[in-house]
View 1: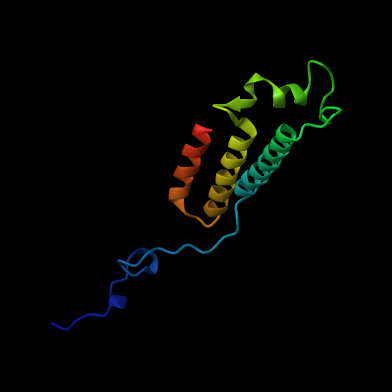
View 2: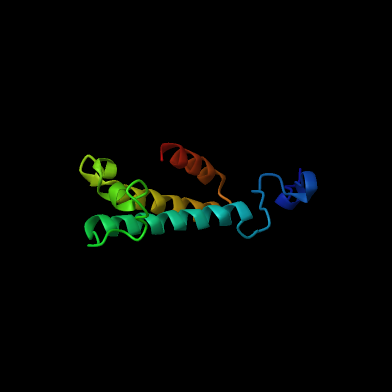
Length: 123
């Protein structure tokens, strides 16, 4: 019996049996762009809050609108740290990882979707 070339084993849709299915490269989906935008905004806000925590302005933060609505109270209050670590630093770490996952998801890796869902659920 003659050995057959792998091109003889053609499956459904003209795909060679046993070869990985390659999908055409698409750009980032609109939902990934939105996630990337939101993760970058969250990262910027976390960096700003960390700066305000370590270098508090003398006149208060720019978002101090009243005694009730005050960023300074939020940044320097009792809930501003967790085990002596500023929440803003934890936020920076969380948003850096989220941004990395979203960027990698744009390349079409399905396992990263699972990582994204777990990361968001733990945040």
